Image (cartoon, rainbow, N blue to C red; front, top):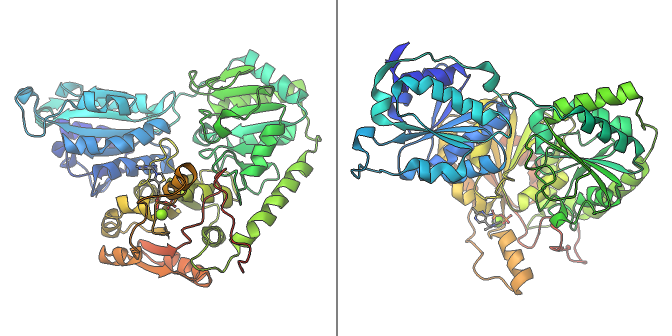
Length: 566
Ligand SMILES: Cc1ncc(C[n+]2csc(CCOP(=O)(O)OP(=O)(O)O)c2C)c(N)n1
Ligand SMILES: [Mg+2]
């Protein structure tokens, strides 16, 4: 086609199936070329939120999300969102308007070396300095974002280049329109060795990380678990790799779920006791592997990841395997079938069932508590009752992550929860929920955040109202930076300036053209959630919770008072 480079850029995005574009109308020549019938343009209140919306959109659809910014401060605002995408392996393509090439070095308005500014936060920075190369470079961005370990890519778009008329072919390479693209498989020798170890194990455990969910290895993980009677624990980003009601599901591992009232004790105990552990698609981070004390050094470890630099990063590894989780497990299962390797009758369910019962007894007093201010576990119990396999839960960082990972169940394997585990930055969840809902409107989206985290992003409620983005937002309002406060108390003996004024965030919601209500009595939660889910637009529940309540983080143990009635 013969058109401006800006139009060719947009047409190439469209050819890749891009249905949402988040930004503030720059790069201007791209936005003015958008076919609004094919692509929803979402004008955001902060470019950071646009990057996060693109992240949510990518996770909801399995296709790269696209955000945009103007030059200078618009571009630097993207950084926090891009960093989370980089650390959590999510493909986001950021279009960054650059000052005109012909003004380089003259202190043009908002001039910045965008490539230098963004390089640490993306997989690649691509400059479009030649209009005739626009379509090819957009295809490169998709290829880089979706292959290997997926991640964000910045496309730098000088405004004079974008305005230039040129010739270009805006087609897509279909392989790179979704992720993971070009799946690799581990070698046959390591597959055979892994199968042998699993068959010989007495107490095997599968640890499913985020790569398991990203690769869609749901059927394969369940089949492998059943073949070897191996429980499946997950990391936080791996939640959903197996249905929580599957008898072999052990729940989320680590220190964030392993403390008082936390289900993590089930999976942490099984990981402690395991003799063979198969880690699938995990970067073996600090929290889920209990400060790297688990698995124990004597445990035999098989580690499969798509990124070779992650395999064996933190633990001595008996069988390193590099490949896509889903396709490599297909090979592993085929090998086991052909070799007759199976231990389905091993029967280790008793141990896990016992641990689960213990946890259920431990959490019951807080999950059913009628106390005011409310126990967060009670609020999560009520959210659990209105969620099903078609619900997408989006959590902010801080305490809501621990409560959600521990308490919420999905009855079918699949992507059930989005959480900013790459950086654990607060102020992420609402834009991520909006991006996911815009990309997949059929899905019911419930977003949970602390009040501190919500304070960063509440301006996007107006955006949600403007575009009718139906998200149910539950603000866990303890009028404090809860995690920070309790951490300071543990570390320093007291906390200093963590508390906020008491604010009813449902009033903020109404001022920003959304609906909402405040709930102080747990008896009112069920009806409030029902009203929120029935509301045709965004709805905010200001849930007033106990500032003393801590997530089930190990070492934070804060029991309810012994004289509490519930
Ligand atoms: C961007 C960012 N700033 C600071 C922190 C450090 N931090 C972690 S949790 C937390 C408190 C969060 O408060 P809130 O969102 O109200 O959740 P709560 O812990 O009260 O449930 C802070 C300040 C962070 N993780 N991310
Ligand atoms: Mg708080």
